[in-house]
Length: 273
Image 1: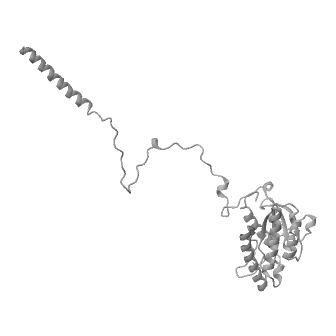
Image 2 (image 1 turned 180 degrees about the vertical axis):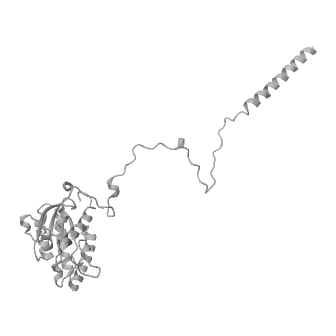
Image 3 (image 1 turned 135 degrees about the vertical axis):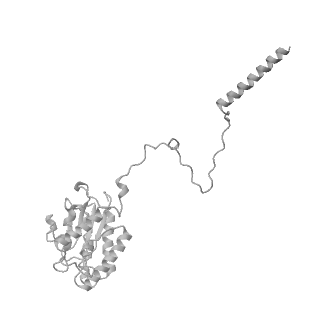
């Protein structure tokens, strides 16, 4: 009987020692319950996600297009000739130049000569309706004849003969409005040019007043303003030296500057206008 009790006691001691050995070898048993979420103190930066936690990049992200750089502050770009809008030019002797438009000729004395150039221009020539010595009244009367040539854009340069004498500025602007109404009736885009300086200080003051009125009116009516007079004007007033031989008409070199100013603006207008 004593021997049996001793044997049982020895077995129990062995089992206790075996359990201690296993606990030391394997470490403590992990709990299967979920750990509480980690909280970030207010104002502290959130933990940075690891690469495996970031969402996959979608394959349909939009790519940059030309429309992302369009607008009035974008840089003008070259437009292939075949993609340029067709322009008809309406005006006085500064538009007509030294040729008869009925013969379908444009020469270097037409202010827009460079604007239709294949390499540096911005439009295709679709015709000219212009005559020497005409005021904005005559130009407005000719608007429908110019629009009948089916342009994409009608470009008007007028007012130089109006400011040769005292003018009623509101009447001159009403003539531009008549041209705008005609263009709207045809669904044609309209662009108007500022008038060049004058050597006579009184006429030059009237040119400045007309140009100021054109800027306000064009902004209100949605008309494209081509500031073709800007590169010709001296800061002290009148023409820059050498840009006019008679104080009224631009030289061919000045005409190219006018074309460049117009082209810089028109290239910022979306194709198709």
